[in-house]
Image (cartoon, rainbow, N blue to C red; front, side, top):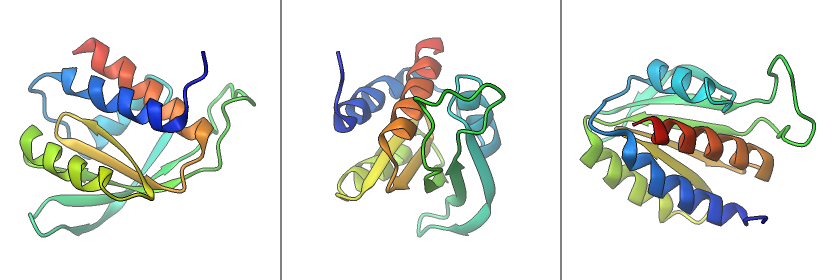
Length: 136
């Protein structure tokens, strides 16, 4: 069964809350989803938002040791927001979802948001987020 990209986002959003009460740093989250195949590269902190939460650049890349041509994406650019807690992250995720041009993922206290993320990248990140959620 083939799901539309929007369906993948909804599935990922529903599963990420299963990560329990664990809070992630930006590096911990990227490392954790990369263990499940997300292939994200974390950049430096670029700013803090109005709530004082750190915002990092993040990039999706399909340059793994064994690339799969069917899952290689275009290297989407995005942002990673580290919220103070899961409640603040839920609020940030809701704001992200309300923007028509963003693809959003939430894991515990962290929100990933991408613009112009292609379907292979969405599928890879969604699968990694779902796998991480199933561990929690």
